Image (tube, rainbow, N blue to C red):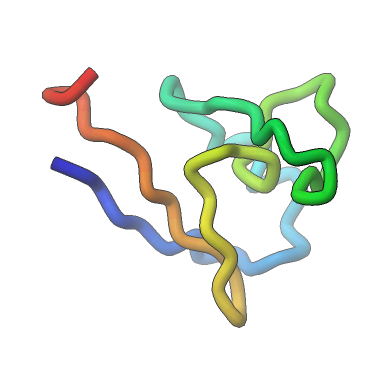
Length: 66
């Protein structure tokens, strides 16, 4: 089962993206896809993030699948 959630703050809410990073965070290995510093986890750099026109959608696994 997957949880599909749209980030409500858009593409330029860097502090909010850091605060929203969860236990499922996995750093995206594609350097072209990294948006912020890798020193702090950020949803903007997460492998489970899929960009949309206005923001991104999180495609993380549910706790039942972990």
